[in-house]
Image (cartoon, rainbow, N blue to C red; front, side, top):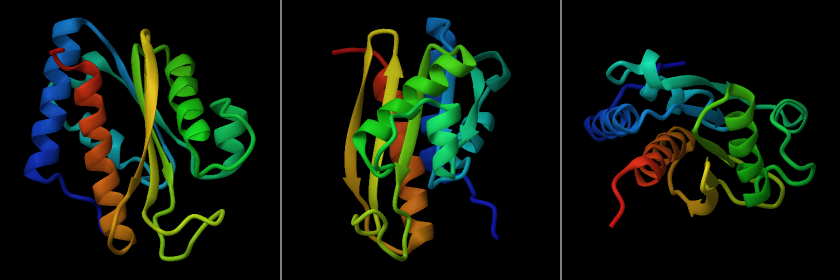
Length: 162
């Protein structure tokens, strides 16, 4: 399998995350299902990542989502699972902010959800949120779009307000 390459947009987002996290003295963690560590790879490639990036959990199988991260049992292609993963990895790794992704990369549907159905959640001290996305394309394109959107969610969580 080909290793994902950083696009210029993903690289810029990861650098923004690094800057925001360092400026605020915050640490970041990831929990990833369908992206299998792509978000973490982007963050690890950013400036001074050892000082702000705690790490990540690749929670591909359901039992890892439930038993390790503490996501609620039920459908894994759901906002509840995504939010549970984000909160769980934040707690597990002692991070200030976390992002989690879960969904259907394709090519087949899962849990009655079509390929490209993705939930991206963030969790921080002030709470969290989870959004549903519908990405088009083959599995590689869905995974790439998911990783990029997860980086955008972290920028929104860490970046300046208003």
